Length: 249
Image (cartoon, rainbow, N blue to C red; front, top):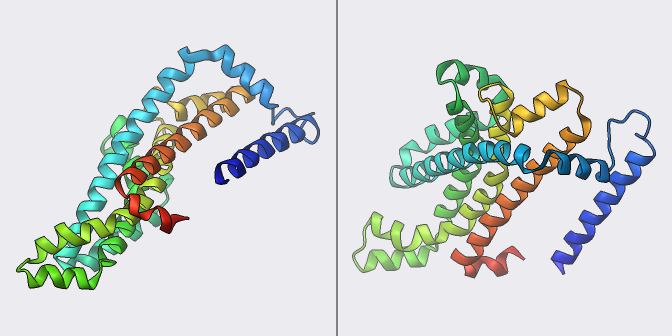
């Protein structure tokens, strides 16, 4: 039922897009019809979209792995050393509140090149995953923790057998949100001119040259990649945490 509702929503959105392009925005040309966008994408083909999407996706995946790996590592460290919680939380909030466009030029000057794209992708996912992991680790069942303690288990045993398993659903919830966020961070990094190829670079060039259908096509490809990333993490979550399906409904 939810898939049918989602399909209906997509069809309605495309219909609204088509209606606005053919009526309200027909004269200016700023909003091309879906047919015009698809025709432009067909003309550009894989030779244009393939390398650009691959460059952005590669940097986004690297940032996704680095940012989420660091977030999960910090969450585990905070659980083992509670005194670090205030510092870790403050750093996470700062990373979330500071605009990427504000720190992007600084990172570009310090690191340069593709490292800037990866860094912005990583910082885009750090806060969400850290908070999700911390909440999950703290939601462990108290009776299960006491049981491990009764059988002689220490802090690491409680973490391994109870808290990590308890944290999986909320951690994967953060990872699902992080997948599109990593792509957005990578595109913003490319907007800063730190890369010669990618969706962000192509979007900037298309805007400057007023190639409207191509700009919309690039935005559509970016949205599709972000949606596929979310769906892939959600699929992994369903396989790894089958007991959480009922809770998510």
